[in-house]
Image 1 (cartoon, rainbow, N blue to C red):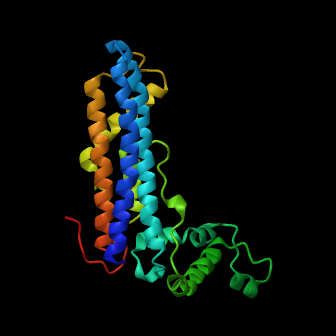
Image 2: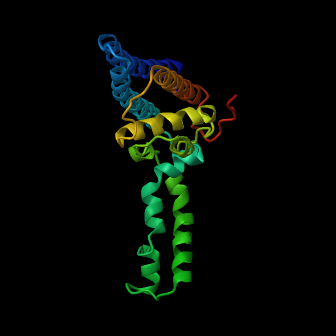
Image 3: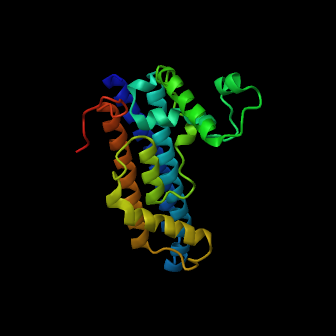
Length: 240
């Protein structure tokens, strides 16, 4: 992937983050029209819900952009790291893991009603996988969209699972775990009617800063991953 494309992707991510932050700023500016602190606290509940929506929405957009950028390279599975190669073989592995699947060669040897021998069946499937593996690895890799799954509740563990699935350093955001947990818990408490008194100004400012830091860190992570070609199998560059 050439440098111009990588820079273009970073600019696209920054533009995406910019409109989200501007929208939140527009809503936040309405606070000056509310006279009482009590009503301001209640209004901030909607700001926290929007803040979380932009955090999850941006995260989804950013990693989908990363996936699309790699897909556009039309790399062979044998060229990419094993995380991405495995993610691109979801259909093949699902078929392989299906207990009802009867591999063609197995039928050819034993007929349409092969013996009910689970050990022999497993051996047949494993042989099929080994026979087909070279062909699978020589195919162009396409990472499916479903690999990027924020689970509508983007807690630290979900974010770590997402990073792991894409072959990215899974502890990239460990320093933000407590802050992410606070954001998700506050959003959920609001949605469940547990914060009737609202959110005070200092709490919201802390959540807003945390979200901004995380979103910017996501941009840097993706930019570095593309620049250092961490999606490739033979990438020897280590994150620092």
